[in-house]
Figure 1 (cartoon, rainbow, N blue to C red):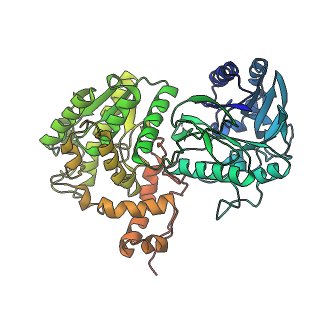
Figure 2 (figure 1 turned 30 degrees about the horizontal axis):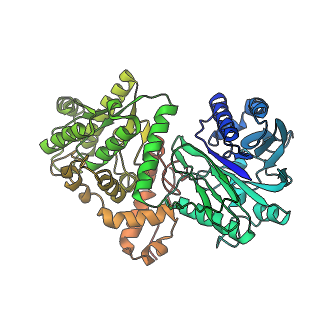
Figure 3 (figure 1 turned 90 degrees about the vertical axis):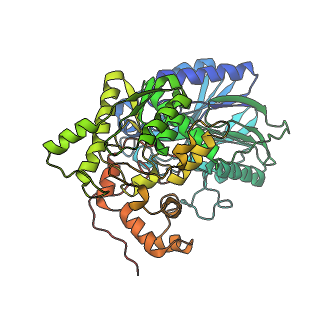
Length: 551
């Protein structure tokens, strides 16, 4: 069988645009003499449409786009991810489905059984589980279709499973000779390698070819990396789609030609690509052509500026320098040099005069050392936020927030100041990873000045103020945060990994404090590159009195 994988980039609610992408891919598959073309999960409506799936209008119009898709399938079979109405008055009103269309005829639907409700997923809120399972015969081959989570519960691969049922195993027992898995599987560090291992393991064990197609593109903070693959019955990868870009490719299942790449997705280049795609799609899909960033001469804003220039072009990036009475001369010079090297526009808007006026007007104590007058320190950040939001408003630019995960986790940020923005680019990137990104960006030439990378991090909101006066060293802090967020490790497990016990409890209590949760609740959408990230994938109350105590 000749198969085409259609790794397309969809937009939530853009039925017209998504349908056009589907039709173009079908036409290309036909030109390439393909027998079967496979699309990602819910690619018609957009998988991250959230509570739109509760809207009665969505249920009523769910199948309307298929009326345009069905007529173009002459001579080919298409498997298209969509939602469809259950037709029942009780329960959820939609199934998460794969429409199977062959030669201008809708053969039927395969519905999703396992509905995830962890991390960024909330399928049981919107969908009913499948009520039956069936195979579809395509060119004489019984094909089993699994929708995302239905493929991810192999008891021979996972040590721990979330469900007793394995729909894919049932399809194999029913006599499937080809497995098709359609997915909207978000990017996390290392997840590409896990997917590849899972798919090849299943294929090798069942001695069946697997067509695994994943969504690509950014929708709000969730980034889908694609990296679709086709594996033959021996578990050999015969086609690997590139990550972070649309891809339509065709392969013969019996080609016997091994594709050399099986992506791991755990390196800094992959994080780099994910963030660039996240910025580009968030701007494009929200109709922003230009962006604005506050550049301080520090590493966080420098990395965001470099990523933004790559995502939307340096001619569309504005860096704004806003020195206060406590900003070093070097910071302004470094920021200006960064703009020159990146080729982006920079502007200087000092805030010293406005700061002094407001300090007097509000009868604030002027900082003479860090922490002595937090209101006056934070006033500087809020003045900068005001300037940046005004430029955004006046010029139609998307404001990119520059705070990193290490600082946001411990509340080392100013609400309505440096947390302002339309998109938090580094909100899921630890400070040590920010440094790694800076070095990676400089791998061919020094785009980010060495002086920015090597300087001692400082908010510069008071004389002689530095991050390490308020935060643990980042090389001690980040391993704790990584275990806590990404692996949901207990304090005992984090300590057992070699971290200081007192530091662990101090860090976790700072992360979980109501004041810091209150700040994070008001962050802009955050580009997600890991599991259980700050934002939609992590849900904690603001109001609480829980505190971790060492035994």
